[in-house]
Amino acid sequence: MNILSKPGAAVKNVPLPRAKRVELRELFSSKTSFVICDNDLNEFGYTIRFASPVWLDLFGLTSKEAIGKRCCELVGKCAVTKHLEKRAQVTGTDYVDAEARLNYSCDVFFPEIMACHGSWDRPSSALFFCIFVAHNKQTGTFFTAELVLTQRTEPQTGWQYTINFPRDISHEVSVKEFLDAAHTDGG
Image (spheres, rainbow, N blue to C red):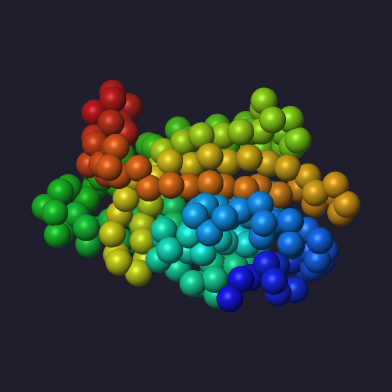
């Protein structure tokens, strides 16, 4: 079921106008991984208001699990940290070192997200790019993801929102390569 066809895709409990839902549905194909969030960033991420089916598949989630939740709790640092110890045991890697490297990578890009926060509707300053370690809940696998983030304001309601476009880049940068590089001395 397409969540944009339901009145549940809401902006601070105000339903999106039908024309906007149709526009969004037509704008994004079924091949695009994206999530639309409130612009309420904290250490647990943004509150998810809509997740494309491709985004849900990428992270192994259902819309019920994602909508209204914070993105980093589901797919980012919080989700990865919950499962990092198990992965370390399976692969024989040092959990403390892997956690330190994960924390370092987040400590580097979180201030950058905050710097771009509030720069709505100025394309030159409202884009953010990063690479991070993500987790697929359904398969239990970790992968390296690239994220493009942009912030905008909906002109009719004034709602400030964030759209994230993640994609799996594990074929280009493995999780091990990323964590090896994620250190104050570069690995």
